[in-house]
Length: 112
Image 1 (cartoon, rainbow, N blue to C red):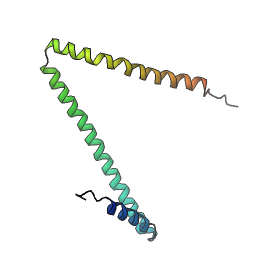
Image 2 (cartoon, helix red, strand yellow):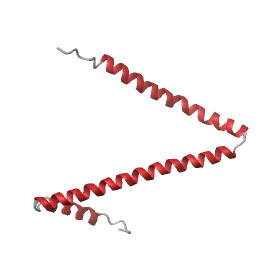
Image 3 (cartoon, one colour):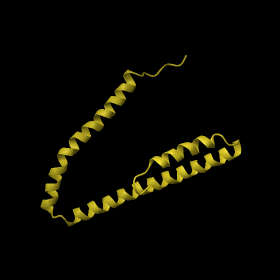
Image 4 (cartoon, rainbow, N blue to C red):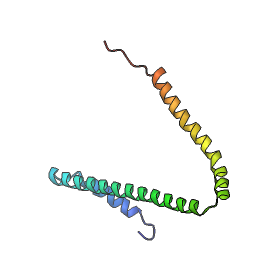
């Protein structure tokens, strides 16, 4: 795996999945439950890592902003301001489009 040989792993995984379908019902269900539980655990772990990375990023930005002087903070605001306007327009466009689309394209039906 250190050499980038992924093909044997993929081949083994495909064969393993195929032969799981060929075993009796009880072992198949147990293996399926095991893999589902492993998937759920990995998903929770990934969400934790992403959440903690956001907290770390917030901490880094807070430290940088705390070290800046007032003039530097104003300069940083001038750099960020042009980016806020397009983002605001995009969110406004999505909101208006979905609300008008709901009203015009999919009007509520009257019950009979």
